[in-house]
Image 1 (cartoon, rainbow, N blue to C red):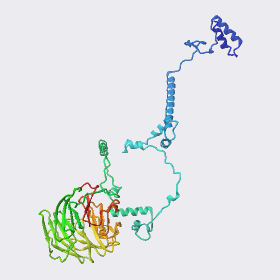
Image 2: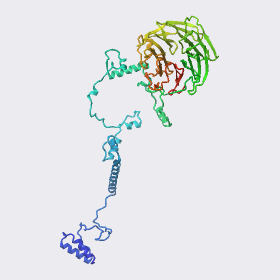
Image 3: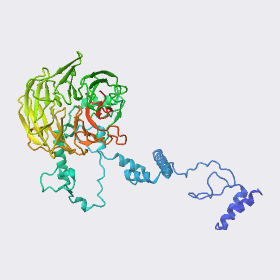
Image 4: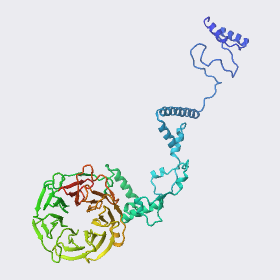
Length: 573
């Protein structure tokens, strides 16, 4: 008891506000061991079950305790507390993660999701949004319906430049490309919208109409079942879904140098003719050394097959027949036409053609269908012969000198370029002139060529300009305008050749070294990587040709070399 009295004194003496009567009553009760009486409704000074200075004990049941809360209210309180605790944990974790994020990422999140730093539930509600109810007959898929939610209205621009709204005028006179599109002198300036329409008209005129890929009003209609089947097929296979384009791109032509076509039979004489066989992987090379040689094309060694030597007969031109069974050759100073039968291995000279009064036979053309042989004579005459019998069918006459001639792709027309810059169009069957027009800007024509698809006519002049026309305009108009004037050469254009796919036009001049270009069609732009000027191995070009499927390109120069190139865009020979 002695040990407890000082502690009790110390405890109760710390409360100076307790009245003396109550203090004496408390002391008396402790000496007798009785508990002090409390008035009903009063609370003890310390918690029930915890004695002064002793360990806590179980509290005695009292009828005065309040009844416990109902279970539903307690569960709700616990759930609210748990949710609040989870929210605090998420908030703390989010703040921890955002400390490591860069400022750019935080700014992007704020732009996309809005300023919802304090409430993630608000962000979830905003992302879910309210879906727009569609009619039952709508054919939209579930993914499309989810994407078509109620989005906030678009923001207004912060600043608008008044000059942007003004219609800007484009100068048409001081630009050489736009100047050709002017229809009259009043169109010295055009608005951007009008210039766009004019460019569209020029493109459609060059393409011969609106191409299929540019038609916006045609759409492929398919049922829902077919579309679902296509989607299933798309998801069931793997691989590269992006295929390479079938059309030749402009700008850079992927190609490589191959072994010279006549590497196994070198010569120093000028190469006058290079031509690929129409059906076999063979190239023919002929020149002023009186020989016609055939080589197998493999791009590596090009082995020689055969050489035909014609005594005292420097070859001006050699050409395959349309079926590839014969080789025709003319000389620089003879009227004899040699025909070599490749199947029989016989050389047949044609000394005289009945009705043909030409002293020298040099330039000639073979029709694509193999029916006709056209000989360019002197004094403006063109002679049409039968390819089978080598007999004269008829003659045609132009004003001036015949510079060059060629057949159309269907062999029904003949295009002739004259020495005074005019172009004549003849009908083969009736041998009548269908049209006659002046080649724009030409004073002296040198070469002419037609494309195999029947779309283009190219005319080369002595000033180095190549005009590319649409064949329809050459037949119908008396003064046709060229689609494009190619001005990349500065000397007379002596050679023109279209490739079989009508995607490349080769132009060359024999009067200047390295004067050869490849023009992309239909853009009419020159490939920038050919020729390689630094190497200077092409020299003066006298003849050119493409293989039947455009896989190879060959040209002959005055040094006796038949250069050959592999065009990588085309997979076949």
